[in-house]
Amino acid sequence: MTHILIVGGGYVGMYTAIRLQKKLRQGEATVTVVDPQPNMTYQPFLPEAAAGSIEPRHVVVPLRRALPKCTVVTGKVTNVDHEHKVATVVPAEGLPTSMPYDILVMAAGSVARTLPIPGLAESGIGFATVGEAIYLRNHVLSRLDVASSTPERMRRALTFVVVGGGYAGVEVFGELEDMARYAVRVHKGLSPSDMRWVLVEASDRILPEISPAMSDYTIRRLTERGMRVRLNTKLVSMVDGHVELSDGTSFEADTVVWTAGVKANPLAMKSGMPIDYRGRLICTETLQARGLRGVWGAGDSAAVPDLTGLGALCTPSAQHAVRQAKVLADNIIASLRNGNLKPYKHKHAGSVASLGLHKGVAQVYGIRLRGWPAWLMHRAYHWSRVPTAGRKLRVLLDWMTVFFSRREIVSLGQIQNPRRDWELVVRETTHSMKGNTRTQ
Image (cartoon, rainbow, N blue to C red; front, side):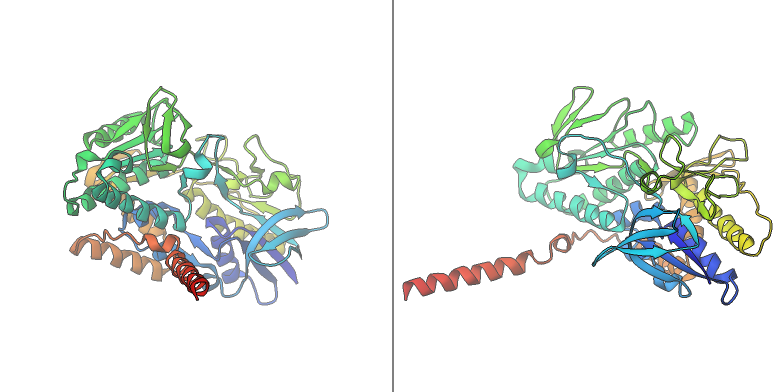
């Protein structure tokens, strides 16, 4: 029986597997999905999860529940030997194993693009997983507690920096400021004007996917809220919370969020597969890897021709990834049945972005929206794309709860190190018992 190995359980991996398990005939093929996480994260809702508008568990989909007819392996594919059709899989716990396959789907997605900036590894906060979203929410709320309880640290605690002016950066920038502005009301002696929010972008504009006019509008709206946007500026250093920017500005900050882009997962490059200058697997319009029989690719880690004429290659977006997955699954089935393959072609519909509760920008099919309408468009579009009906219902209930009641502004910082108090009690008890022994 043909074995289909899917590397990655994100948009492409999960949606391809869902379609395969639905359309494959009994006994025609088996499907295995390998991903370091046992769930798929709907990343466009991470900013709202960080801001408390959506329960974090509702932006992830358990792969085993979504793929009951597939085998899900929690692990990482570290190398592919396509000549012998064997992949090396390192499980979450245990020794590496070799996994043979007949058909390979490269859907490993992207990884954060970082730079050798002093202090970034030690003090920076990423924003690509639900765990990071939870951590960031708790961290921001805890800084308000520190500022309220320790006035001498207020300036540093209430300075928040986001590096990267793409969709992820702008949305988390706007959503977190909106949440913090609401939360600061309960802290006596603090006001929104005490907070300093700084967005750092290396290029001359933010949100490059939308028109310059909409980008300028977004900056104006953020500035009206007292937030600062520094264009043509780079982060130089952040050692011990001392932030230095390329324009000569320096200040202290407890919070630096890194959203300065992503790059293709390096698996294709490590495995000697054909890649473009960005490290993406070079694919044909039918989503087959160029020159490799039985290898397919899509999503952020694949260079797929854009047949609409809008660009040489499809942009790395969830919009393309979900649609490519559908064509990819159909073409794999067609190849098993000696059928005709169809090319992938989809015209980009546009872009939407949230800037906080009831605030947003959107450019869809050439129509520009701002404020409330854009915010509603953002929610409607992404709600329609959330996987499974159960997740859609849960997200809708989350929104209704926030609409009819107040936001939750409790910091659950204990979950970052839940064993700290326990370890402290054990150490104190042990120290006390040793002291009693010496006095006897």
